[in-house]
Image 1 (cartoon, helix red, strand yellow):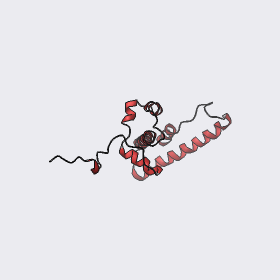
Image 2 (cartoon, helix red, strand yellow):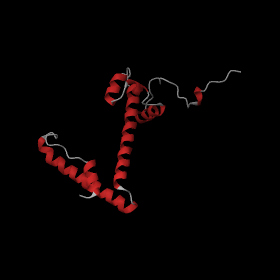
Image 3 (spheres, helix red, strand yellow):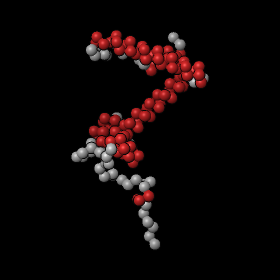
Image 4 (cartoon, helix red, strand yellow):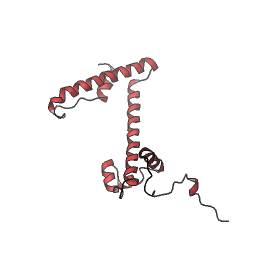
Length: 145
């Protein structure tokens, strides 16, 4: 096996027997994963040939990018659950359990940017935001004269 094929096998592991439902689909799933492995190995080889991209480091960087994207997705979903759901927000405990975070982590997991992204995505504004956006010029206090 080449390094490209080995990395592809790590990125696309085969399921254990009995892990696929219905069991009759197991061979089909394995064939699909084998095809994904071949495509990934070829893509890694092409990147190596074209730009001298080191395959393992490239795979790690791609995995990190997917992880960061998933974390941002979780932050937007938490913002939705806390700021947009009606008649009341999801509890911190429920969101913490679903996200694998602590309650205090949920409180600080999202910010005004996440709320704005959710508002833009769903086309409506949030309930009243729990804190003022410090970057909003309308929230600056006039100094006493």
